[in-house]
Length: 376
Image 1: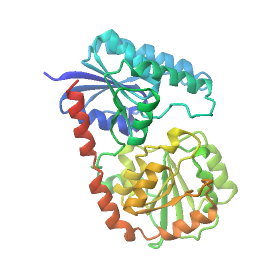
Image 2: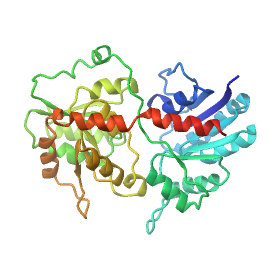
Image 3: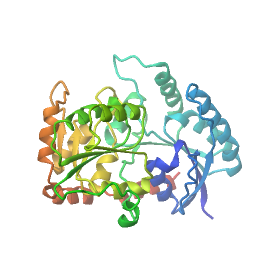
Image 4: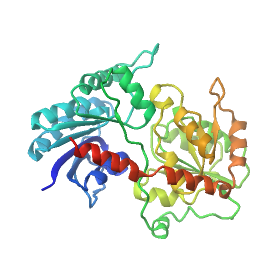
């Protein structure tokens, strides 16, 4: 009989690719139950079981939602009596340890984000709270997982860990979907002219990511270019207002959030993918982006900011252009325009993209995860 693993994530499982990948990989040897926030979309997967927690829509008191989630999750975990309790991200770091104690199970903590404090930078109360939870948790954890080598090394040094966290990179599963069936749901995503050049940005709609500069750049490109924005976030309404005020409706398409199983097909209609992060904290500087893999799988060249993990990929495989590699990390509108012209023919990068994908496959990460979790 397979042993039971309970995965807990304070997120909607529908959109959390990292949790989905881990659950699918481990389902080969374990019974997996994923407990997450209820999205109302009735998500399910044949490889693992799901249990969703309904939470009130409390925008002004987000802490209450989090505490309610902790409380509502607890009875389910106790009933399941898992062999392993697998907590995803800092929202459930310390509760995960408590759940493992209550069920006498081994504890795995997957650090989706890097939340250690930066020298000389004061933490907010929120940042300090979650940092202290993570700090108190790690020495009692059976296995710690990080999303790239840089984060693993920083965590080992900062927390004085005996062993560096296991690195499981954010490489998406190879999509298995019918392009025609899915893309028919997006009839407006059809090129009017073959020479059009479509640019995709998918992720957090947050001005801190530098999206506004790309919107500004769209005012200066010719009519061949079109920017497709995929995702939701705090500044989505500001972005919509900016598009209207600057009459960019013919150059910018705002799709909003779409199901993950539609993403590859939608990206495949595009030519260039944007990966942009600020340089304002360690988590963003040492980003562990899955976007660069998703773009490559869809055949897109990449326009990326110059964080070390992104820079090492682009400089080695040469299927994109980097922005902000100067000392000041400044990105000018002209540098974006020059990059778009250089990347406008994605066929020039096809060979390099295929080599990158060959060298970076989820199967390698999945095998590593299965082997070490099986040993717990």
